[in-house]
Amino acid sequence: MYRSAFLIFFVILTISGFLPDSITYAADSHSVAHWLFNEGTGSVLHDNSGNGHHGTIFGAEWTDSGLYLDGIDDYIAVNDNPAFELDGDWTIEYKVLFSYQNTAPQNIVFSRTIDGAADYAAGSAYVNGGYGHSETFFQSTPSDTFLFRSREYFFIRLYHVAIVKNGDWLYHFHNSQLLSRQRVTGVPMSGNGQIRIGAWACGGSDSCANRYFFRERLLELHVSNIARYAPPLARVNGLVAKWSFEEESGNVVIDGSGNGHDGTITRAFRTDGILGSSLTFLDSSYVEIKRHPQLNVDSALTIVMDLFFRTV
Image (cartoon, rainbow, N blue to C red; front, top):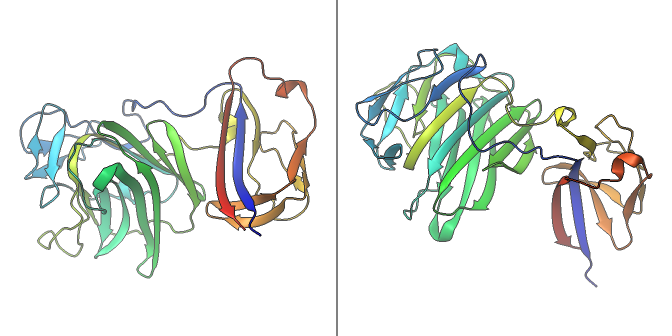
């Protein structure tokens, strides 16, 4: 006999919205580089952060909405700088406009490479039938690699993608929605590297071939040395409760909001999930939370959760 089960990875309850706005903000003291792609002409992509990380355009063409890269050999080269090592929390966010043209699965928007090894790379692909994904790849040593890919059906319109590292977690946002998260352990490598927009640099020398060229229009790219959008969720306006199910043992789920809305587990069991620790629910499993005036929500309400359904 087959039974349906579902895994819960985290639940957030607020009395207001918490997901980020889809419009990127102006450069500030935490900006490493901010390219607006609004020059309209010329071979220089200007960094508007004030840090001077201007790029040289190779082959890409200006359009009435951003810079079009052909996915064959177009890219922008930027001189490397220690600021791009991003060895703590960081955010890479960009605006991309997809058309009806399919892209390669590895459609790299921004990358840093050291001696042929990927320090980190981020991109978004639109493939046949509207299926697509955003992905992040980084490598803490030449033998230690990490790939995180979030799948979504893309439509023919503008997308704002934000890839955020906050502590031990990596988050993917698409157009203000938290798409997925993954626990990470690797950190970017140090040393002299190569920066590419619209490609993955091969490393070694500027004369060797790039790869995984980006195909589509880029309208904005912002690199920051802080986590712009990810939790800590305790900073969310109107946060009522947050359960991450990461206790690993016991029959209590802890409310991470600090409001004390802990829950008692009945017949659910702990397991490792695709996004981290989780609870698996079968048949009459549940978690009981004591009644409290904070939970009597009679106005705006936001509930965010990660669920995974399977048959057991």
